[in-house]
Length: 89
Image (cartoon, rainbow, N blue to C red; front, side, top):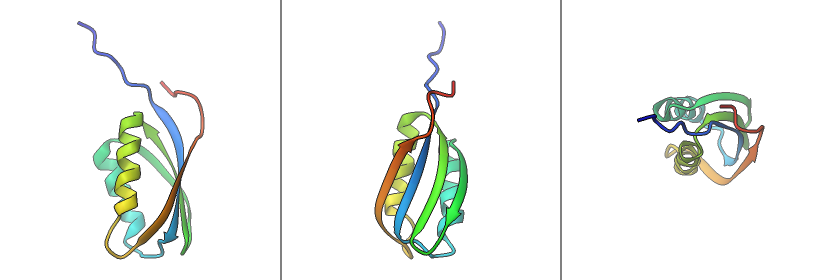
């Protein structure tokens, strides 16, 4: 029986809030790795982090929820997700 392959999406996640904590970017990288997502962080500032993630939609959803909760020393106000391209599968 053939195993169904999940579509791989690529999305940009923009995290807005008080995200200047030095712990947040390493936390994002670890969380993405645990979920099996490819990620590339390309902007960080005191009020915004932007990254591209690639993987199944359900796991990107989990990444968004995890980032919204984040580590204790950040305050996430908004997360915006934007499709970067079609399925990469």
